[in-house]
Image (cartoon, rainbow, N blue to C red; front, side):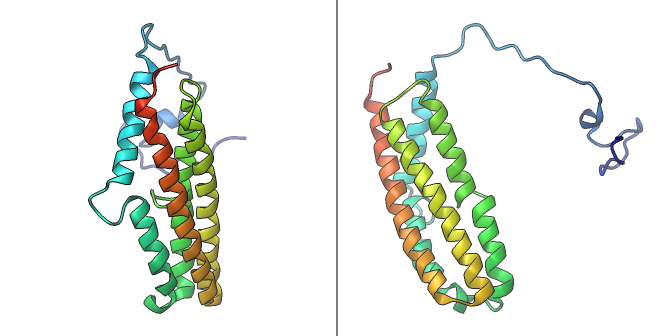
Length: 187
């Protein structure tokens, strides 16, 4: 089976704009440096900076405060949109699969924390468990918002708002668990 034409514009050399994607039989070998930095010294400052930004954001939209606010406002979305059948399902899709305000980010963060447990333990396991729960709840929230848009059902939005309140509580708990990371000694 031969690949179809490239969807990318042609370049002066005759290939697509991303010719490296069209090359057949191309492989790469990556060589890691011999003296890698200590994982603890790389992981801990990055996680604790993220935790601090989540728990102490100066703005009301990011972090647990933003999730709590969304939980209050989502209940009014049927009233606030002129065409809920057109507006809410795409909003739910974006919440589920794009950006930082939904399940995609929580799944990425959950997986990152899980990989970090290879080098560190303790509170990372608690953070991982709680972020796994939060990611599932974001998926449930997106499904309820989509259903509310399709059916015009305010109860779905009320339920989504309650779930978002739970998500805010769970994520705040996850981040508080991760604050202990900076005070632990490397394994």
